[in-house]
Image (tube, rainbow, N blue to C red; front, top):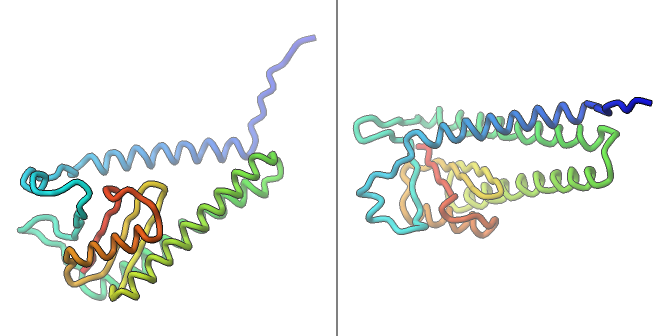
Length: 188
């Protein structure tokens, strides 16, 4: 008798492989994007303290400033909310396809169920932070959370240090992330 290689490539393995490739591409693109232009000027590096809030504004430099009109910023927040909802829906759909795929073991189903709970917790926390920021006087706010970082986008006419500290405090009250991984972006 001859032993044959038992190689079964199913739907789950193809989807998992595709998601792995997609994740690799996203990490590489993020690396390329973050490597370009992330140097801190020396005059700011010498005066700043580790853990201080750093502003990320829409201005490129003192000669060129990108300004977003009120109508454009409203459109931006509407489109960003739509994009955020679509990406969350796609993530839930992928997890559901794995869960209801039919050929998952009990351990795999438990991991998938945990992932669904984690996505739900992120959605709930993001919504809570956005509502808290709106209650504190920001007209528009978006929050994007992950395991190790938090990004907040607010609509303001000018963000000062007290407001940045207020945003950071609100965020840290809801999720534990390293202070250096908090990014605050203002849209005027």
